[in-house]
Structures are given as C-alpha cells and as structure tokens.
Image 1 (cartoon, rainbow, N blue to C red):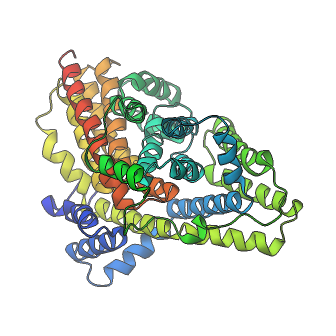
Image 2 (cartoon, rainbow, N blue to C red; image 1 turned 180 degrees about the horizontal axis):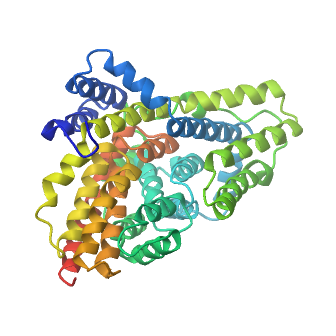
Length: 468
C-alpha cells in the first residue's frame, strides 16, 4: 500500500476496537492485543501476521529508546525509595504547612517545571508526590490527571524541547520557510495560538483551586478518596508493579536529601537541557542513565551493599514492566494504523470542504482524532502538518499570516489532546504509572475535562477563523 492510500472505513477498525475494548474490559493489554490481531487479519496477513508485527515494530531504534528510558527511570525511582529519598522529600515538603489544595498545587507546579520531557514529567511528579497526595486523601486518578495535563501540554509550549525541534523541522520547505531558524520563528509565533495547551494547563490549576468544579467520574473518585480514604477504587489495578511501590528504605543508611534526591534530579535536567543546547537534541535517556549511575555510586558510599543496589535496580525495572508491555502493544498498533492508512482516511474524509475560516478549527479536530486513534502526537504532527500548513499558505498567498500560525498551533494542540487522552498513548500510560493509578480509571476521569477544553478550543478557533 502506498503512503497516501487507505482501506476506507476499515482502516479505523483496529484503533476504534482497542479504544472501545479498553473502556469495556478495563484491560488495556487485552484490548491492544485483540486490536492488533484483528488488524493483521484485516490486512490479510494471516495468523503469523501478529508475531511478525511485534517483531518488526519492537525491533526498532525508537522502541529501544523508550524501553531503555523506562528501565532507567524505573531504576532511579527504585533508588529514590531504597534510600528513603522520596520519604525525606515528603517530610521536607510537609514542613511547609501544607493543605490538601497546596499539595495538589505543588504537583501542578512541579509538572510545569519539568518541561523538557513529557516522559519524565508524569513519572517524576507521580512518583514523588504520591506519598503526599495519598496522605491528604487525593485520589490517584486526580494525581494522574495533574501529572498528565502538565506534561505534553507544557512541552509543546516551550521552544527548547524536542517537541519544538520536531514541529519546526516539519515546517522547513513549506511556503517561505527555508531553514531551521525561520521554522523556529514560526513555532515561536504560533505559541500564543496553541489554545488547547494553554487552556489545558490553566484548567488543572483552576480545578485544584475549586474555581472549576469537579464533575463526572473525577468527582466520584475524589469523593471516594476524601470520604472513605480510598485513593484507588476497589478492584483497581495500578499500572505499576509492587516491586516499585513497596520498596522499603534501607535500614540504617545515612542518606542525604540533596545527594539522593535533588542532585540526581539536577543531573537529569542538566544533561537533558545541556545536550539540547549543545547538540540540538535532548538526550533524556542518557540523562537518566547518568542519574542512575550517580545514585548507585552514592548509595555504595553511604554503606548500602553492592548486591542490594543491584537487587533494587532489578526491582525498579520489574516495576515498570506493566507500562512497557502496554507501550509495546501501542507501538505495534500505531504501526498497524500507518500500514492501514488510518490517518490518511481521516484527513481525506474532511479535506475537500475546508475554507480559510474553517481551517484552524477543522485542522485541530482532525489532529485530535488522528492522535486519539493512534495514541501518537508526534505521528500526528508528521501526518497532519504537511497537509494542513501548505493549505494555510495557499489561502494566504505564501506569506506568514495569523492563519498560518493558528494552523500550526492547531496541529500541535490537536496532537496533544489525543496524546494525553487516548488509552493508547505513551504519555497517558506514564502518567498512570507515575501515579500508580488504574490506567482506564485515569483515562475515564481525565477525558471529560480534556474534552471540555478541546470543545472550547474548537469554538475559539471557529471564532478566530472568522477574522482571517
């Protein structure tokens, strides 16, 4: 099948099946596996198509990168727990006269602070704040929502992230954009038009402060947590192994909050941001490897036996395996969607009736549908940006106008919506992992808020389009 072809409405069958089954069965692994199996049968690849899909998809550099990143993050979090760093951080924060609202606001600010990686942010916020939020009876679903909605939405607004480089790179060669500097300039001018990202981050703060009232499944989850003290519903399956949530601090170890917590965090931030500035590519995986090695050496110097350090590292890796399995199947489904032309079908179905006034709103809607169906924001950017932005330039006579900036922002915002709402998304999986929340419970409680923000963004784009 050529890159611009699709299987018609059958091309959306696997993604739709995965999403429906995930909500019905509450088992993401089963849902993704069934969707992949049905997809390969639809493509006519037979029974052996499923293992072949896994082999070809998972034997790639991109999946190896996320696999190693997850393993190193799991190791760092396990080291945090074995040294008592998270407990010490919790005690340090508690001395600041906290309330239930203030604890959530700290998580919100932390999510915005760790802007350089949408992979690290939800894991860091969830794992470091979980003890505090549990103590103040904040539901795990609420913590996952805070972590999720301050990761990708913030990353897409900051010009010194991998997201910015990727999006601006896609713009080179479109209209009058001839080089990377001009493309980054367009990205910067598009930031104010990225309505979904701005409103999404702001909404989290307003929800925490009670300005926006809780509703739907989130309201029930918070009522359960406050009134019954249950941060998880009965029967929930947290998306993290017990190996990572039940690691006790090493008895008698003389640990330091700075060396065992703040220094590794600074290493991660320093390496990621530093490599971005020097190499134009944030080496996030290498940053976590460096932090893990640093922590291992510090732990040994603090008297923790080498065998115990290695056992802790293995426990950390085991703890992130539930997330890795889901990510593996999600990557496979994403590849299957590409093979079946899922995005091509969605775009083709709506491309012929676009007008300048409708372009930003419809572009946002298409990007949101593609990202939600595939669970991939970057894949959505790569597919929708080359289709929508040239249309904007065509309407604006190949000049840089607010229509172009709004269209670029609409693609970015739509991609983020799908990325942090789809049960197939890696960012959503990592938010559930960091908060140790049931994954489908996280998705069900977050979607009403994200959908409300998306609807508001869509109508604002419609009103904005009337001025173009």
